View 1 (cartoon, rainbow, N blue to C red):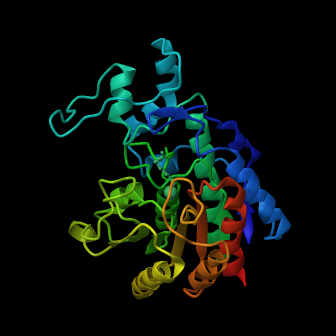
View 2: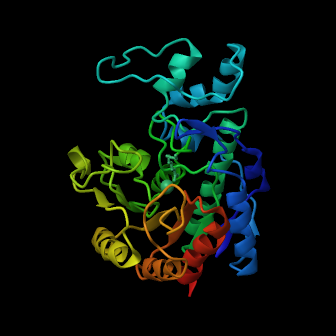
View 3: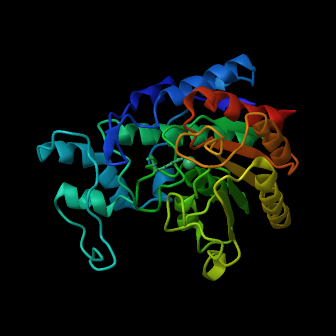
Length: 342
Ligand code: Q9C
Ligand code: ZN
């Protein structure tokens, strides 16, 4: 399987993450990619190629222009206001103050465009988000041209990024940008299956009123897990999109036996939909030792997960999302790809 990877993903090394009332060293760190690429080389999975530059056009097909403008200048604006640390949002539009105006001040704008406070915005945020979507798009084009499969070793991840919001370590929604490009290149129906531990709220939000992109997500129940305010079973899509968003919220402690029952339901729905392309939002934070998640998948389960995904028999783009058990992330992610390929 072709792998798209760039050493430049290392350039994003954030110092702070607000977690448990402290500033900790971020879970979403460059070593994640080091472990994955090391395991991919060892497997070996196949050729490893550099991404091409796709510019902003495919991003603006999904995200609002004002949001992208904000991302492109946020760090300079934050610094110009004399703030000493990394940019961490600390105030939001809420039910009682809905934010009908986008503030001028960077602190106000930061909260306006953020959905959570754990993702520090830094000097490298925008460039690394652009690089990440280039990795996804390069891999996508290979899948479209060859009708086979590819792995986009994206970092930072993307599935929490909504039309005009960052958070959950995500800035640009890589799977959404890829799905839209596939549509623009003539693929009629695209399915996005999100197997990351966390609900793919951004992806759901982006395609919620559409029936040309089927979105499905298996994840920790939002009553108990991030992102808390989206990802419930009753969210099935709206208008023309009714019936084209499917959530499988699962309890903490979910093991692979329970997880696969829902995977098979998701596969049945995908089969019925007959997409021309399958995109997997590949998070491996479902792993039993993941430091911020509560599912119980074991390393060998990821081989079987790949095998089950392959049963759909579709051209498949794998896009890296979460996974924070850094030393095992390579084994687990590569196991999915190995299981898929055999
Ligand atoms: N104290 C992805 O997996 N909550 N994002 C962290 C740590 C945010 C996860 C809590 C989790 C975001 C792509
Ligand atoms: Zn996750």
